[in-house]
Image 1 (tube, chains in turn yellow, cyan):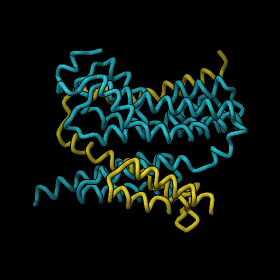
Image 2: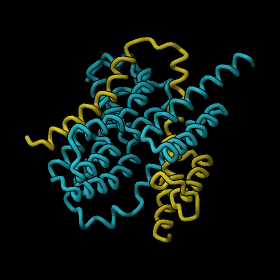
Image 3: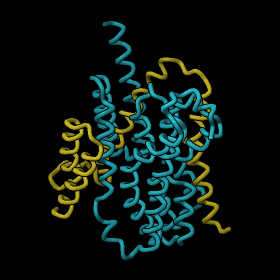
Image 4: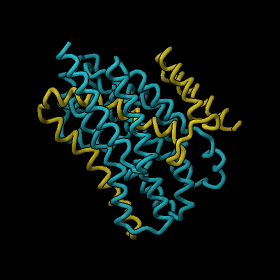
Length: 105
Length: 242
């Protein structure tokens, strides 16, 4: 096996451990209720933290303008998601608007 | 198949149904992963990795952002340890996802948990945590969810690596916006009440500030930790006093 493989193997190990250790350990013990309630805030926080830079930044620079097709495409997505609560509809609309805006700008 | 787990769940919850349900919930992830996988495959080949290395990374690491970064570092002839440590830093956020999912998996065996752990990504976590916690899933729900996402990522990587030059125009299209749209949907259904809405806005703003102002790859983890702590603390405090 060459060096590249062993580097990739190392990447696999350091990626697997943070994925598996918490569910292996934390699912076996009774967690304090305050911690469980805190964990309830984590998914929305993570999603918003992933979306913010994805929609508002371009290569770490603020990009809040009409040339930012992702931000523009996100607006109807939010609207449809709130109105319909339909995932497939939200994604199809998002893809359609993003593709049109991307080809246009 | 573990009948021990199944016996504790409602009789309507069968492994087969749960598998189908998990696969179904992962279809939007699949639609997003194939084009991003193609983009990864194309870029990694351009960076000088051979087909075996491109696929070894997708099969063994299965973590998009870190694979793009690693491909770039291989291309720039970076040292092995710096690639591994960077991968660790980029993927540490999974600690948070895995911790958050743990309470739902209290009944699963160690082997089951070790298997489910292989497939935790931003997207599979987002879908799994959007499921109502009151109705526990069978392990096969998570296998279906994770394996479908995994199949999409590897299929995309393979197509990108093999057909690279021909597919550049397709990889160019903003098909990865499917994932942003899915995040928007999942965020919208997660936000029940003012405390969660304020927390989400805070997390988004902090993440942007950290990324743009401090140029740190830790923006997602830092922003989520701070916002979740403030949100949970605020809710706790207002409920007590109110």
